[in-house]
Length: 268
Length: 316
Image (cartoon, rainbow over all chains, first blue to last red; front, side, top):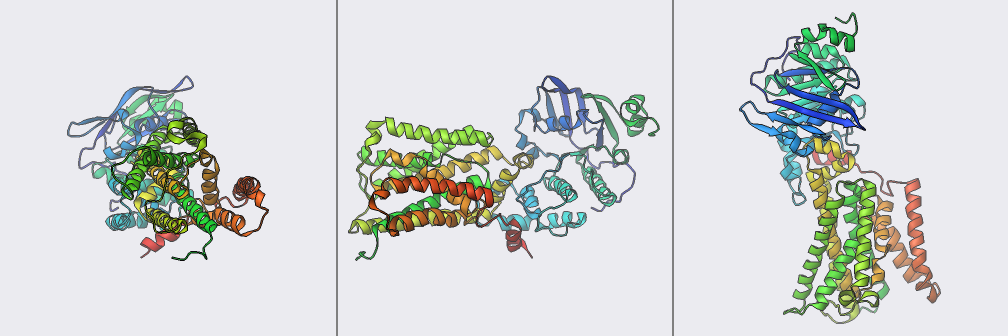
């Protein structure tokens, strides 16, 4: 967590993977909520996705993660080396195995698990979570991941990691830390700073910059537009289920359509 | 060995307690941790019992006991495990209602098969020919030894459950029970995990069914009613669904109190034992379930204390 917070857009040291969404359509009760013809995410290390409520941003993110199935279309992960994995053919749980990870818009937590538990769950390898592996694996997993977990917990100021996450803010941060422990190659963050105080918002943005600099592609869905303008090198604008515009933050924030449909006059 | 001091009813009562504790512990893994509401415990238990009985009695094995018992018990365990895998395949991604209907339906299928396949099971007439895989003297001595062997198996199940709570596997089960979509988003194969848990627990239930078959030595379809499932469920809920020792405490407080204390040591009129008491038992168990769920839904032992456990395991 050593990268200084500044307003400069992060530049990746390593080219990150991309996600390509083609002909992706999702309807609920006959109403089309997402209809994306061809969209590539990950052209830049940190990209933003903005739009008014109901534009379909969160639904699109969930379609990428296959947590809701597509009516038609494909979502693929394109590696910098040229490999392609069709994510929309995979089960939802296999996204994380390919490094595609998403934080949640609404607060999501395991009510029976402590903070330590929650982080150990994210960090522990699948091979150690089998019914015959019940003797030394807990201690081994803790030893292997303790330093990394402590680093994140101290950075975000968790005071009692042996206890349960109590506040909405703690649960929000815990969600982000779980994502970090999964070693993401492509990280989707759905309103990662919603409800967080300024100090923690700054910490989250620093972490995002550091990840991007290390080669992780990051896409942020956010209503706090300062986060978007400060972090993102490219921004997509969604309305009524479609990606209407894509470009640099300056172009997007000044574009007539964005001002009319989302920002309102006098925003710039 | 002189066992005159030992009441035969006490041995059978304790056997019932030990066996239901075993079923309650397995149900704890399914319901308490992974939130799979298995209402068909008796189906897997009964399938194990009858598979053991059929293979033991109907097949002319080239070897005798104890090898015959071991082979038949393994077949019964595998059959129950396979049926658990198949039922799990159907219900693992269903909601609670689907799981409830699927498991209850399976238990009903087992009851109907046991009733109708008279050539194999004896149907309503029952099935004899079973016996202990050893003979150490009197029936009472044989039964006592069988109680100790079964108690050892249940102790192993208890140890397994205790270890599961202290392992990444247990954490995964709790995570699936708490928030399955979130666990899936962390890369956890939730469907497969539930499927294998169901298969393994069903296999162990089948083994306990086989052990019961040896103890009673005569299989009756009356055993395949709701009583076994209800006893395991009520005991677990009363003791604490999410606690390791929940099934142990709860089953002693229900089956233990009723089957040992009331049935064996309180002098009710003799005719009550055949008709009134079994009905009263189910009524009391049902009422206990309602009262516990209303006033102490987490049972006598209360909620899971992962914070305490984490401090114990990793607090340094």
